[in-house]
Structure formats: structure tokens, C-alpha cells
Image (cartoon, rainbow, N blue to C red):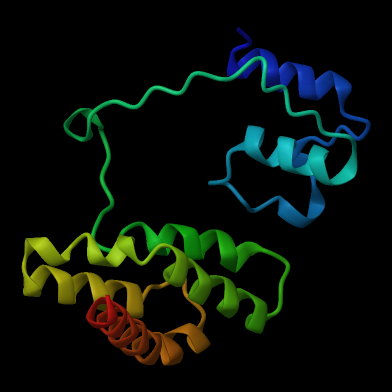
Length: 159
């Protein structure tokens, strides 16, 4: 079985365009993106990609009580927003990315609900006023949250 390192090496030597993650001029300030993921994605966009299903990569996941990190006070939304902030995109595009992140991964906020209303509202506040989010997101987020919440309630009532 090929391990992740061997698979990455295989991509490295087979890729027609070899770009060093840290020398890519548009992305020099993206420090929290995994370079292997970046390289595979860039190779996929610029060259041929082969999906070798015969050689799966075994992924192990320790129990949640064994991890040495947590989601902080905001579900790590601020960390993701920090990466979006550094991308060479317009404010509108960055805002759409931030709204889409919440839409697709709203669990990052809702994981705090079982811990009580106070903890949940603090998480909502930290996401809303995240230091790395775009100002347009700060204006839209509360309305989007209410709409998303009401739509979810309506879906549950219909079922």
C-alpha cells in the first residue's frame, strides 16, 4: 500500500508543472495551508491527475478525547477567514467564501449549543466580529444566520 508520503512523491515526480509552495508569488502569505494539499491541487489544475483506487491511503482518527487541540471559541472560523483574507480575490469574492463556509459548515457554530445558551451566543459573537472576516460578512452574517435558522426549523416541521 502506498503511504501518503509515497503518493505525494509520486505526484511530485509525475506532475508536469512543479511549483514550490513558498515561491508561488500569489500565495506567499498563506502560512496555514498544508503544502501537500496545495501541491496536489495545483498539480491537478495544471497537469494530469491519476486517481489510484487500487492503492488507498489509510486514514486513522484518534478519539476526540485524545486530540491536543480544540475548536476554540469560534469553531476555528477566524483561522479560515485569515486564509481567505490573504487570497488575491475581491472583497465580494472573499465575502461569498466566508458566507459559503458558514453555510456548508454551520456545525462550527452549532457545536456550542449543547454547552448552553451563553456559550452559544459567545461563539456567535466571536464569529460575527471575527478579526479576520470582511466587513460585508459582519453586516450580512446575523441576517443569514436568522434565515438559516428559520429555514432549518421549517424543514424539520415539514418532515
